[in-house]
Amino acid sequence: MKNHTTLHLYKQNFKFSSAHFLIFDEKNAEKLHGHNYQVRVDLAVPPEDAEAKARGYFVDFNVFKTFIKSKLDEWDEHLLLPALHPEMKVATSGDSLEVKFRERFYVFPENEVLLIPVTNTSVEQMSRLLAAEFFTEFKKYGVQQVRVRVEETRGQAASTVAS
Image (spheres, rainbow, N blue to C red):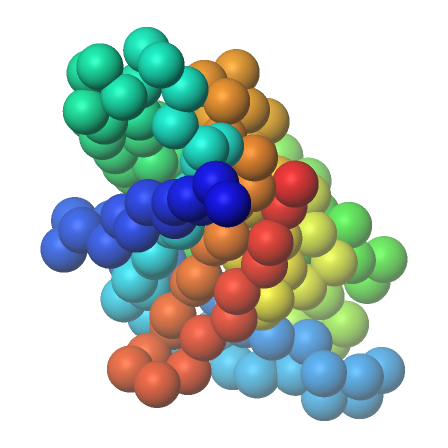
């Protein structure tokens, strides 16, 4: 029987602070607000081969930590908006981004807003997006599966597995 190993990466600095609002249905949506998100990444790695056995480890954690942290830093201190929601209308005006959502109208500095490829900025969709991106990057190291957990407040999170 071969051993299977999962690497668990849950660093204090695997976090991002962002503003967003959830869209519930055709009439209801949250007010604009923010969270201090915390992220955990679990990596399923293949059984130890001769090279890994001789080394005593799969891959230097810093390879994964650096990539994870850089991605989370991209989202840190930004307003996250769902680029794929049909009612989210965005236009650039100089250095500003004009955002229209139903009866709401906002103007933000363009460099403080990220339009992410989701239909809603929920922890479910954020974890899916990050899991897919991390798996795409980490499979070149032999990672077989990635689970990403995004927690928006203590005890309130979603996780997604990509393989």
